Length: 386
Image (tube, rainbow, N blue to C red; front, side):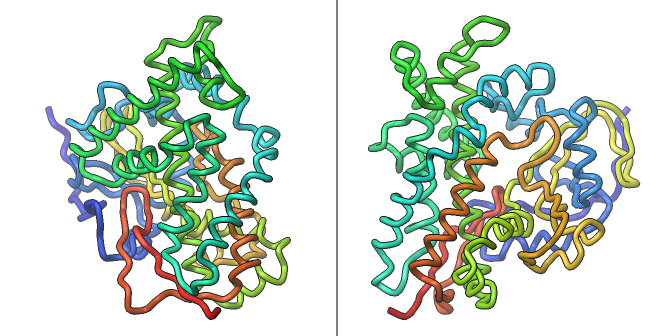
């Protein structure tokens, strides 16, 4: 017997490009109880901070396995993202030793070199597309070296990640196959000739004392590949756009670089770009809504981190905000392993940008296009006096 769902609310993630700011769109669903939408195969949409933390911290009730809509399941799942304990900890155990703060810290010298070279390439022109010219190029140069991929193919890798995260299901499937093909080739090379990089660690990683199966290693590496090439460019873009419109904060960063650390946490909170999904394993009530076994959940972390019950004046970026317990990197056993790398790159990027270009503005007569999957800008035209 089918179980009746509550009246559905309209909720759309959009196609490859949309003209409306996705954060403005999501704000229309802020602080509501979980609601049902028929979009994308049907799912509960969760927006509140307390509900979000509860779901993310309880993988037994809210599973990461089979979290995609019916008909969209991939033959080879994203790992460790599409797994639950205890397998989850085994997969993360391969990745974690290479992604600690101590492992990330030595990358700063290269971050500064790459970042400065990119900014110098357009600073004297008085304008740039901050997404295409900086936010996408800077992280991929760092990630490619950290991961252990051939530098000459970095743009090919980035395009694959961009297609998978933003395009139609059919295009995503093609991109996913391409990503796995690239990574499989590199894993096989690293198994015979490992180096000091993350890809080698994955290639030679063990589970229960045995070398991880090739498909497992390929899926782990492919997931890290996606995470390293898209969400950080989005974070950089949103931060620069906000600062372009708020000269007081922009000037504070330029005059007081020590504030960048707290600024990064506020930008991560205010502009959280990833919105994960889960599958309910048993009938349960969440935030006053009755969910049933098998139901899918869309978690709007973008909204949870702007919940006034948790964050006073949530729409305001406050560099002096105390007790900033945002969940931009998730929570619970799936908390993002790349958080140390992301924070470090963001800090270096904002510091060096504002050393070179302390005053800038959004070009008013050039439209900005957006994505609603991973919340992102396709372009960000900026200009400044030279």
